[in-house]
Length: 325
Length: 297
Image (cartoon, rainbow over all chains, first blue to last red; front, side, top):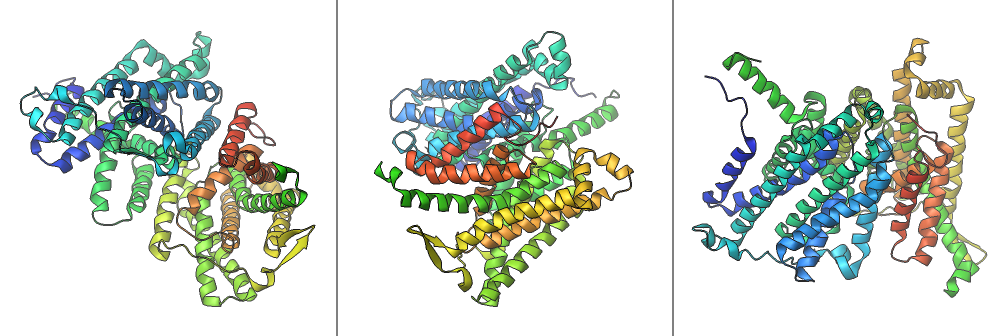
């Protein structure tokens, strides 16, 4: 018996995802929605981190911008959900393009610092601009999208609103993930990897390094914005904390914990962090303490992240079971 | 806008700006020093500062509200934080020097999380306040502006610490080896210097400063959870503006930050913190290595 050479993970995950509301628990659906959104957010970060070798320290800014744009469009301007959601993505991408224009000129630690400075500017604006963002109090009561089109589906139509929103999230996240996977595997994605591995040589063969970095920075900002739009609705409110730097650190941790050299690594990381959080929070309020300990263990014991460790395991199993390495 | 021309008001703002600046300098100098020599951006520097503030508060409860008690509390806080820093360097940080920057950042962030919760666990989430030591609790009048003695003490202490550092780094053999190690660690080790001992000493010194500034800030700001994250961002802005690793740059950055905050309130009452981030971004765009720093590869 040998394992199939390529398992269509996207399809498998999607099918597994379809069955979560069948369990009938609002709690599981809640967790699954949370994981989906953060998996998408972390994967968008990994377009920069793993694929392009850039270390942004302000990715939460675009998540926050997407959340505010989507929420404000839906509530204040009564724009239908899908348009508002896409507007959130465009908002994230536009801001990322403007900030990215300056950031991609810098390398290594200076790039990280400038992305952080811009993110803090976004945070400061969201925190103080009471008339539009609600300031420190946040922007509450974001409406649920109308999901009338789900009504005609058998069974799904009778579900509670949070299960329906979960299905909406699942579809949109699956589409976004497929798009990101497409980008990574496209010739464009290959060039990004080339630039990551050796920017100097890439320049020699005629690649405009800054242009590629700017494009991927905007794309990552756009997908982060899309994830933010969903999260604002899921959270029923948007708060300045969405853009604050610990949020950027949180998503960095998820991504690295899962493993940056695998497409699904960040999603695994998001799932692990969210599930661990739920589990530990039910015992103690000192979750950050345990997160810190997990990070230390990760840094000292699993430098390749969980997905890296898993890949080694799978390779080992395959070489034993399938007789090939 | 008439207050813009009122000299008494302006002098008052100058006083508060200078006090903020010198406070930040105390903290940021340690952060800058660690980056200059160890090449690590230590997010946990703010946590060490917070621990210093908590220990100082705790010690004033034990030692009483006298000037001597305050001095004792400050001493105990600074020394304990220095020891804690030493333990962190010796048992954890030492193994991170050869790792990528990203992992180093994550490592110091893990410490931030752990220390923040440890403080909550030990000292609770209630805000605490420390009264100023009687000897510094008065104030005097300078051209119609009330000038608390404590502010003057901080404004004098900042440049003194800077001068002390300058002497240490430029006029002692320890400083010469430190500066050499910052440029080429392997070579200095090959010449027989105990580089890991030097790194330990630098980290202990920087931690001492963090603990000291935390202890000294306790009579001015309340000691609360979250003060670590707040201060590290401010200190970070300061060292980025001035130039990571440059002592005089850090002093300049502190002055720019403190004065922007004090006078920015007049021009943009709601957006003065915003102005500080904008300055940071502009400096990074125009001169990524900071106003007085040197480019690193």
